[in-house]
Image (cartoon, rainbow, N blue to C red; front, top):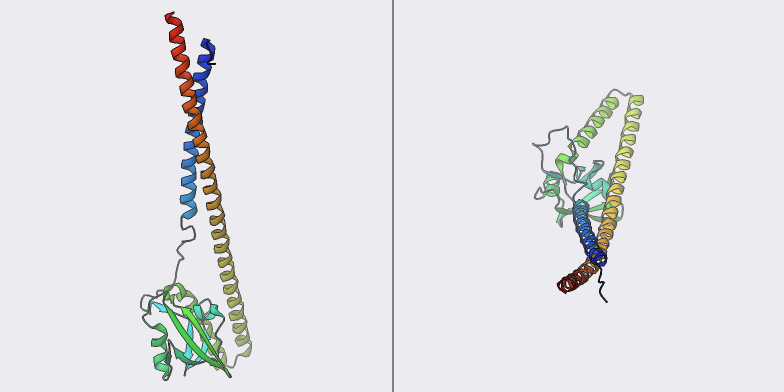
Length: 247
């Protein structure tokens, strides 16, 4: 039976207002969820790195292999060839993208290919009796210009030490290069771990927020049903009050 007193009528109106306030809060929560999802989906790792060496006159891409007479003489730390762990100093180049390596002068052009960072190049080498093949993604020269300059400076210092027969300085340069290489490797591992952690966090946050939105949708449906019911009761009570006053 619907309530017949004025107090009951006012209580129904108040309850209806509370339900509408609840619906407003649900809408606010939904907007906050949308904002969180936009933040989670944003490229938080897309931070530009400052570069100190101008590489605008160089090739646009590189795999970081240094070659002499068809032999890998060195690899730039942090470059694709080095990070692949497939190649070593002393490897003999056999083929690049299926083309047999015949002249040393062609090697650089073959490695550069279309000179587009992000494109792939397949390299086949011989190491003793082994034949090893790996696919590398060309890196942007600008991203590696500073490291390449550092490597060139270290190499120059080492050459000067050898020319002057300064064995102590030569050893110190070797030790410096070794430590620098390890630091670069540690930084690379550290950066990769950060990327993994952030991506894992984004995935988890995305799942949680989407689940929360589903709960909000359910709560919204319940709230709308309650509001409709409360409005119906309030209207009935209003009609009853009107009928009572007229009599």
